[in-house]
Structures are given as C-alpha cells and as structure tokens.
Length: 268
Image (cartoon, rainbow, N blue to C red; front, side, top):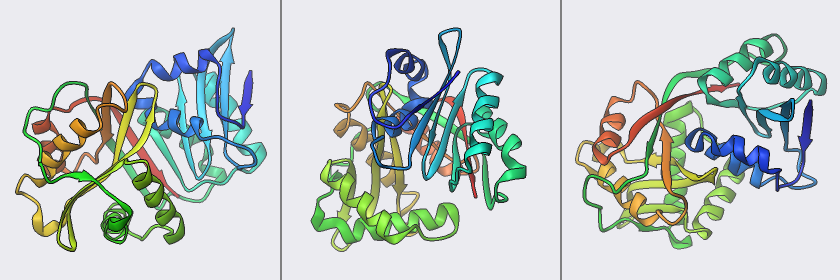
C-alpha cells in the first residue's frame, strides 16, 4: 500500500526505516522533516504487511530508498500517473538506478550521471588536528560564501545554480550556524555546510577549497574542525564523494572517515 505525506511528522515505523541506515537516510529524513502545506513536495511511503519497505521524497530532487521490488514498482506507477517533475535523483545506488531504469522512457534524458559516489561516515573523534581559523559563517560573509559555493556547484555539475534559491539557502544555513569557513581577508580558503540533519546523522555538503590552495591540508584540517564544531547535531557525520576525486577521498580518510555505502546522482 502506498501512502502520501504532505506535512512534517511521520509515523514511528517510518522513523525506524530511516534510522536503520542513518548515513544513507540523513538527507531523505531531513527533507521529510521539512514537508509543509501548500508546498508541492510530498513523500511516498510504501508498506507491505504492515512493514515499511520504501520511502521516497518528491520535490526539486527525487530521493528514493527501497528495500523491496514492490516498493519500487509502486513508486514508479505513482510517478508515471502524476507527471511529477524533478531535476535529479539522488540516493543509494541500487534505489537510484532501479528507479531511473524504469522511468527513462517517461522523463528527459540524463545530462550528467555520477555513477559511483562512496558514502563515508565518522562517529569518533577526528584523527587530525583542527584548523583553529575555521568558524561558523555570519551574514557578513554571505557574498563570499555564495561565490565559493557557486564555484563548487559549477565544478560539480558544469553550470551555476539558480541564483535566488542558492542565496536563500545560503542565508538559511548561515542563520542556523550550519556553514563553516576559513576566511582570509576577502577570500574563503575552506567552506563546508551541514546540509542535512536527520535519522541520527548529519550530512556535510558543499565542501570547497580553491584550486590554488589545494594540497596543503586545508581541506582535511578544515573538515576536522567542522566535525568538532558540529558534534551536537547528531551522533555521526556523513558525506558522499565522487569516486574519481582521489584527492578528496584521501583527505577524508586522513580525517577518519570510513566507507559505509555507495550513492549515485543522476541530473536531468
């Protein structure tokens, strides 16, 4: 049976499903917490014999998680019959590609596929020292944060983000003390956001070091700072990284992250 949710707050069995994989479901859980009327965003919950087997967030992004083929097929049927539009599919590789394979005849072709993105986690003290110059950003840093974030976004997907939405999100994260930076004069040498909190984990997004400052340990020590400054958000931190970004993967391993799964992202 497929149930739709349109407001935040979900049954305990949904919470149990999300908590079963904290790192994989952190982003998904955070989006479910943000559901509200009259937003077009909704969540689909699939149950079989009283047990949750699938949870999917439908908004600007599609965030699926399935533990059974029945949950996948029910979700596909709903998407096909309701003409849902979205710009990307993000989540565990199995769920992302299973969904995309069935939806391909009905949606625009993919313009970018990140096929393998190791999902990393840490729940212990970082293995290296913090960068003591990393701090929570303030609105006085906003323009520099947007500049750094835009450069990171272009480097990832090849085009700039929607300016108004990106600015609004940057302001929101700064106001919630979830953006951390190392600023030197009018330049940001390191930036990272706590982009999602949910399911017992917080997910780090938007990590950025300018190309001319890479290879000096700024990213790894900056990440150690973020983990120490953010430990009150949830018991564990996570992030996902492109498999071909060997420098970033080595940096995160140096901090103490370990691989716990695999994500994929498909941009339409």
